Amino acid sequence: MLLTTVLATTIGQANFNLVLPVNISQVSAIQMGEIYNQQHGTCKLTTMGRIGDACAESVSTLGKISLQGSKGSPVQINVKSATNGYVQFTPILSNGSQTLSITLNDDTAVYVGGELKVLSTNKTGHMDIDYVVEINYQ
Image (tube, rainbow, N blue to C red; front, side):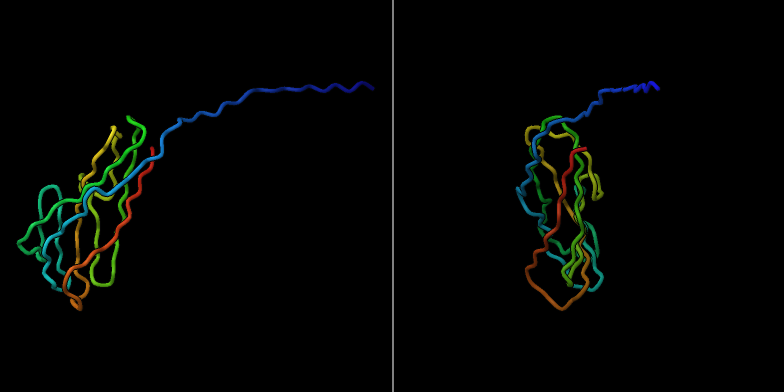
């Protein structure tokens, strides 16, 4: 009895793009300005200015974030809402949402505003709230 073995092979490929890690830093914090301490009051700061029943007349400025990575590479930026029991903060990117797709330059500037909602009137004075910024290559 004669046994015959047939062997077949092929070569597969893996494709990838080597990129630099994205470096992200906050250049300046968002300055929401003076906010009236009224339950459920809101104040929204965007590239178009400030609006809302809790916005007191005061100076406000968008925050600025700097990104560096592989020039010409597309990235997606996501910002996450935060709360501290007194206020709820929703960061807003320049397109009016919490997600933005852009192409990196040598030093890419991203401006961030936000919407602040007063949850509790039990505290007054200066407050800070941290929010998360995520950057992913697309």
